[in-house]
Length: 283
Image 1: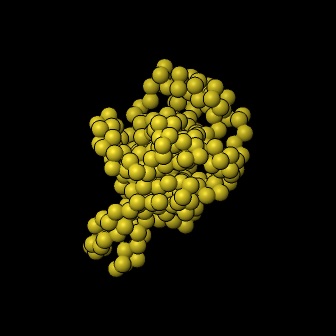
Image 2 (image 1 turned 90 degrees about the horizontal axis):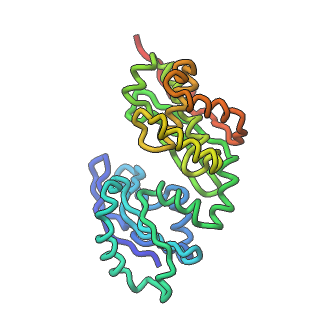
Image 3 (image 1 turned 45 degrees about the vertical axis):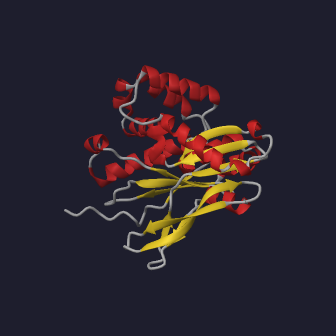
């Protein structure tokens, strides 16, 4: 049932090759494709020259008959064009008309951006996936990888039974001015990863009541530039753990919220993968 199209793919080694990329996934008929989405292997191609694995991000349609989901998954970079995409996707739906069932109006239609957006939606709307993955996502250890001398600061990896998620660690220029040296940066990123472990869109340990309270506090004490509530939580948690006195002076309600949250049980532990991966600073 899957539909594929041939794309021209360019590898970083300079090789250009043709690859068949999936544009339509029917979950019941394509369980192996659903599993590849969960594991992060979906639309991943191997370069014929250097064998490097390349993930090709493209728009695709995800259909789930059991849960009545009709989901357009667009590129992450397209999120700023959310409103403009509606017309384009109506035309795309027309071209896939023969895949609809007679009761197509019963589907719940969603627009998400990137694999991460689809996973966040499925963990809420796919009943079987939510039941099977929720516990393992919250109890399987998370793994932190801190990178030095690279563009990316590192990642926090979460895993369920089938789901694999990588959450980027962030260290901005503003934080660089506050934190001195490699050890200071490592401490900040460790605390940032702790914050991501506590509150992220896939397996948050905040109850609905706590999440509502957190967002009310965000409105009263606006963040310093974090894009969303999860990045804001991780960034604030790092600032709170680095210097509580300074953090309290700037964010008294956030400080009280975090003080109370330290009594909440977080069964998922963060294991470090960075011990031998960070070179010592020279000079």
